[in-house]
Amino acid sequence: MEISTALMILSAITAYFLWLTFISRCLKGPRVWPLVGSLPVLPILETARLDSEPIDLQDLLLRLTFDNICGLTFGKDPRTCAPGLPVNTFSVAFDRATEASLQRFILPEILWKFKRLAGLGLEVSLTRSLVQVDNYLSEIIKTRKQDLTSKPNNDGAQHDDLLSRFIKKKETYSDEVLQRVALNFVLAGRDTSSVALSWFFWLITQNPTVEDKILREICAVLIETRGDDVALWIDEPLACEELDRLVYLKAALSETLRLYPSVPEDSKRAVKDDVLPDGTFVPAGSSVTYSIYSAGRMRSTWGDDCLEFKPERWISRSDGGRFINHDPFKFVAFNAGPRICLGKDLAYLQMKSIAAAVLLRHRLTVVTGHKVEQKMSLTLFMKYGLLVNVRNRDLTAIAADLREKTDCESNAVNDGVGNGVRR
Ligand code: HEM
Image (cartoon, rainbow, N blue to C red):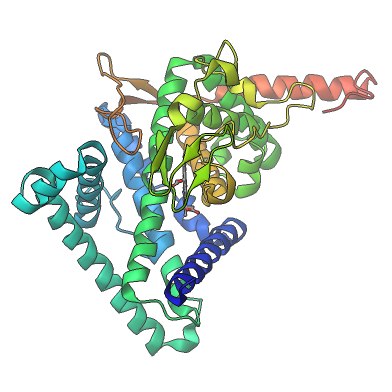
């Protein structure tokens, strides 16, 4: 093996472990919480409710996860969810570049190369957008490096984002590598969670029984952790420990990703000759694309009800309602094997936090006549967004019902009826 190849592999492995430790520590520490836990979309939804104006929920969620991921990646919140929903040049350039890159997957190579040479179509906007993205990130990297070298003793306390961690490592990474790491992270963690949430909110507007079960689960946890004063339930976002207990919500999110995976198909290129598990020979240099979307809808894998939205398929009936972690090679929304999504746990935490915060405060209904359709893209967006009306959520009936059930249960225990019953 050549030295340059060995060095490249070594850098990739170091980058991988840095990513992994960063994401794992984010989940354990309080660092991620101010980003994921604070929900700047809530005032916007409240304004939409007060004004009785429909709002594009997909756009709002995209903004929220963009702000979250920029905060985690380079410690800078672009505040695209600020009142008035301002346009952010980095976000727009980033979207354009992603959209234009898709053309290269769809069009024959010769055609997009010709367009690039001739300066035609989306190839022009790709070049322009990449320059904007490049400038934005170069500026952040430059300032951060200056900051970290001018205040070396302030290590960690002020800047604890992914970019700063890479800069602080003993190995020196070129600005180009740092830029690619940051871009990869934003690309991986931005649209994926927000489109999953958009499909989730749409699915539960179509399945009120599921919505009711989710709400009851959240409220039951909150009664235990915060008491039965409903005002206290929406006082603060749910804490990690509260979110961890939301098994049915996790099941509903997983079921959403089975039917509407954020990454609908994935490609790999063989660097050397290989053989698939079924014996198919894959010559070096060929690309293999697999459909995550189809894998989630296969009758042979998921049964006759494979097209139905049933969170219950993720809950064990025999083991006290435990969450079933289906084999990642069966549920491939996060990929499987050594290249499985590194942000999976963080994504669940973020999605649960947002879903619970919105559902506790608001009842959403899709605007009559609004078409919900999939968009042909690297990410499974809704083509026309998700236009919803926002109404107030009244939790008093659920709270009273749960209280009554708890009273009945404790009376039964006091009377000795509940002895031996496992909760
Ligand atoms: C619902 C949300 C998400 C879904 C469905 C998802 C899905 C995926 C998939 C399918 C891959 C494999 C891509 C490939 O094979 O090239 C992947 C990779 C990755 N994801 Fe996620 N992702 C989600 C959220 C996140 C978040 C929030 C982060 C970061 C905070 C993240 C970080 C990553 C990284 C770093 C990789 C690359 C792993 C590697 O190449 O070794 N993801 N994700």
